Amino acid sequence: MSTNNTELILIRITGLDRPGLTASITEILARYDVTILDIGQADIHSTLSLGILFKTYENQSGNIMKELLFEASNIGVNIRFYPISTEEYENWVSLQGKNRYILTLLGRKLTAKQIGAVTRILANQGLNIDAIKRLTGRIPLDEKKASTRACIEFSVRGTPNNRQSMQEELMKLSRDLDMDFSFQLDDMYRRMRRLICFDMDSTLIRTEVIDELAERAGVGQQVREITERAMRGEIDFIESFRERVALLKGLDESVMQEIAENLPITEGVERLMYVLKRYGYKIAILSGGFTYFGNYLKNKFGIDYVYANELEIVDGKLTGRYLGEVVDGRRKAELLRLIAQVENVDIRQTIAVGDGANDLPMISLAGLGIAFHAKPKVVANAQQSINTTGLDGVLYFLGFKDSYLDERGKKLS
Image (cartoon, rainbow, N blue to C red):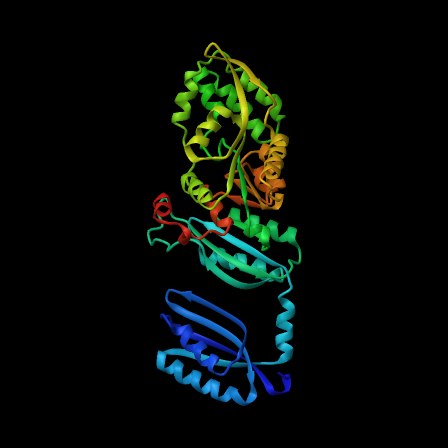
C-alpha cells in the first residue's frame, strides 16, 4: 500500500460507556479492512474515552467517517476526526523507543494538590504521561475510616533531565504532603518480581521483640536506649546486639511463648501475605531479631525462609549468649543474594522491606527496596518508602489492583 494513496486518521470518541460500544465502532472499520496503528481506551465513572489511529485508502476515508458519524449519533456518543501526517506518525513512532517508568502515588487519600505537584515535577523533568490508572477500589466518602487508602499509577515516557534531583523533589513532596511514592523503570523485572524479604521487628510486627524481652527481665530502659542507637546507625549493630542479649541473662524461656502469642502484627500484613502466597512469591524473614519469633510468624503466614538470631537456652533459662553468626546488615544482604540463587531468581526480581539502618544493605541490593515507616537515615537512602499506610501498601508498588483480590482478600483489606 503506497503512502501516496493512503490516509492516517485519528478518531476520538467520548460519551457514556455501555457494552458493545467499541465493537460497533470497530465493526465499521472492519468492513473497510483498515489497518489499526494504535488504540487506547479509558473509562472513568462510566464515561468513555476511546482513541483509534488507523490507515486506510483515500477513496474510502469519506465513507468511513460518514458511517462512523451516523453510528455515533445512533449510540449517543461524540466523535471527532483528526488527519495525521506521515511525519507526525514517524515522530510518534520514534518516541516509543524511549524509557518508560511507573510512578506510583499512595496515601490515606490523594488530593489535587498532591497530584498537581507530582505531575509538575514530571513535566519539568521532560517526562510525558501516557496513562493513569487507579489501583485502589472506590474511595469511601468518609475519609476518617482507618483502612482508607488511595493509590494511582502513572505510566510515563522519556528520560528524566536529572534523576537525582527528581528523586529529591519527590521525597520532599512526600514529607510535606503526607503521601508515598515509587518511581521504577517499567521493564520485565518490575513485572516479574518473585522473592520478597522482610525485616521482622517494627516491620512485620509493631514492636522490637528484644525490648519486650527486656521489659520482662527488668532491663527495658537500658535495652531500648541501645536499640535506638543501633537502629539510627550510631553504633555497631553486632556490638549493640551482644550488649542487649547479655542483659537478658536468667529470663525464663516461657516468657518467649507468651510474647510470641501476643505479637502486635502490623496493619496490612495478613492481606499482604495472602496475596503474595496466592501469586506464588517466595517470602523470607531476614531479621536481627530472634528465630523463635520468626518461626512463629513463619507458621502463622506460611513464610518460606526465616534467618534470625538464636538465643542460647540452658535449663529453661536464657544464658545471655547467642548461637552462630549475628544477622546484621551485611548478613541480610548476603542472605538475600543466597536465597535468590537457590530460588533461581535474578536479583532484579527481588524486593526488600525494612525500617532500620541494618536493613539498608538489602534494601540497596534488591531490585525494589522499600523503607517502611523507617528511620530518617533509611528513608534518605532508599528509593521508595511507605509511611502513610500499612504494609499492604507494598502491593501497589508491585502493581496489584484491589480488583485482583477475591472475596477473602477483600475481607482482609
